[in-house]
Image (cartoon, rainbow over all chains, first blue to last red; front, side, top):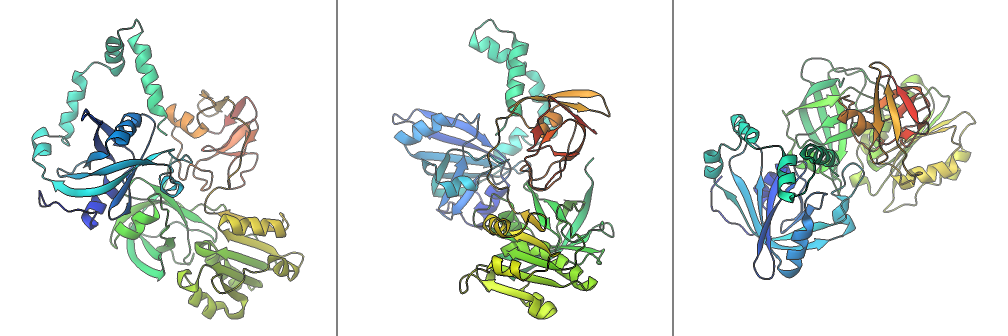
Length: 184
Length: 305
């Protein structure tokens, strides 16, 4: 993969990458340029290529997509960074985004008998593969790197502390685990 | 326990517009036996599992054959197969399952719509081998999009009627029904519209159907119940907003699943006591429950698990 080879559409390699990517980070900004970046994830290929200039990203619970929708309504610029586990190179796609409830788009995103209510359509302006040095340096896919996760306290403890409420962190952790069971 | 078979994709052939035939060879020798009407789950590299009817010859123990239409509104199964699968690739498939078995009869009428022909091809062969009178009416958008047309015509001649809906009227099912003997059995595999038409004409006792996707139906609101696992004695609470399948899996009782919409039968469990509320498409009986969609009318459902 050649770095910095920017194209203005979805070619066969961009399509191939998206078909195998279970995760992306999505950056948007509001009318004042206040920026926001949020994670999206599902099975590989959850982002659909509608045609060679258009992608669609499903809304799923927990995506906090409302922030992105609000931003896109004010400012349609959007930047996407796709990751494939095990692969050092990443895919970057920049363009303009808007919300859609087009039934033919949502039908392609049905999982387990439920369809998302909304999706974000991205009109592609730039697509390119980014070289893997950041992922090499970060040892992102090295299984040994996962030991880092043990250095943080449980998520329930962090949430309880940050919410500054008198709530049992274990209970909060349990309710978080409960929420993780309902993915769609 | 999920029993899988490792296969090598031996070749992929375009057998009609937007339809690929996949020939699967057992990676470690002969494949499991199957009978007409059977399907397999195919596990794809993108984590999706899709069900395909076996359309080859049950006598060939070395190979399975399936045919896959590239769906315009693909959710990621057929699109992946058409764009990215290449010959030589190894994949996992399930053992064959049969929710659509060919029952003995004196006469058969087979109705196939589009890619629904795949389930019917081995049935027609079996009927002819047994010397049972059998007719096939095969309906499609245009003959270019319909796999196996030439092969069916040359093998079975006048007993096959091909209907190209771009140029011809849809078949008159009433007329077909009138031409059948009293003990004839009808098999229909195709889109929802075709199955609905068949259901309005043929007697439920003589009609066997298989759907691509579940029919849109509405059910009474979900209620919570307790699943009792007879073998371990464990009791698992199934809340109203969770499926039996998910509740069992989250409780650490692994139940295999495929379509998760009541079509494939991968997650069917044996019911020992209690009254299941069936929401599946495979016609599970009182002693079975499709854990992905079905629930319980009784507060407790005792499972052989």
